[in-house]
Image 1 (cartoon, helix red, strand yellow):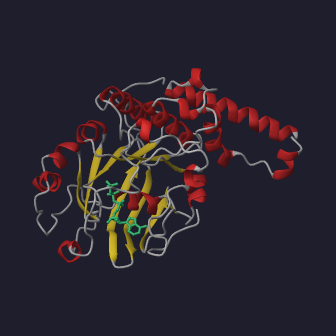
Image 2 (spheres, rainbow, N blue to C red; image 1 turned 90 degrees about the horizontal axis):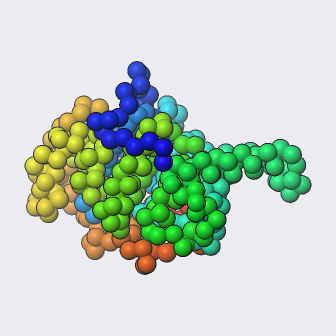
Length: 339
Ligand SMILES: Nc1ncnc2c1ncn2[C@@H]1O[C@H](COP(=O)(O)OP(=O)(O)OP(=O)(O)O)[C@@H](O)[C@H]1O
């Protein structure tokens, strides 16, 4: 990694900030369950925005709506002013990359090959060009390798380029996932619990890596349960509770909000969400009506039960492409994509 900064040491903000992500009124229903209800969220260039909330609050479902894995039941998601296409590979192509809660590397491929997989979306050569290994294809391949090596250097894994991904320690596997996501040259990266299962040292390194990603011009939206991490990292934090945005604001505002404290302590929350700290059009209405409709994940297991597994229990997956692997829990329940 070339740059390490923190919030205080962040480079001066660009003169005019562009709205990179603009999600409006995003609602996702699975049959009778409304997992996400009327959520508005923007992310601007140069920003790191956090999304927090108790287990089952709808964070990952919201991410899936942003990345084309789910088609929201209602609402609209724009990337740099353009409505996003409803399939995940097209969303990646548009400029949004993501990582998943549970590691989804190709374990039997090398570290370098894993990053190259993330690069394929930027390679425009056709089948014949690849099969015949025409000069254009070879040139594109060389450029892709060079970019992949730059990214490995960025995350500090250049010396392990030829190692099998499955042999990396857990923290390095998580970094590799980030490098693979960055290989598509995104303008926005969505990180779903990037420090899950990490020790404090790895968490600190992840924090520095995310600051460096922001500094290289990629806006960041991050889900995380580690509050210290999120409040230190983020310019802005939005809190989801039972599918609704409870509050949004800077770290100071959010962490001192009594309803946020109550939600995390498991105490009953006020049924009427207050106005958000930032008046950016957040949809905080009709909370009480929804409360009964959107219960938290009963077992708190999150998305697929493997999310919190330590390194030894969460080996890299061998055959699952990154942007197709977030298998819906209940394919019959909602509108979902083939991805
Ligand atoms: N495909 C699906 N079919 C039916 N219900 C779903 C589906 N995906 C998510 N849910 C439900 O939606 C709710 C929100 O789940 P989600 O995984 O988005 O929460 P989360 O905030 O990411 O939780 P965690 O922090 O535990 O990962 C939960 O009640 C969950 O069971």
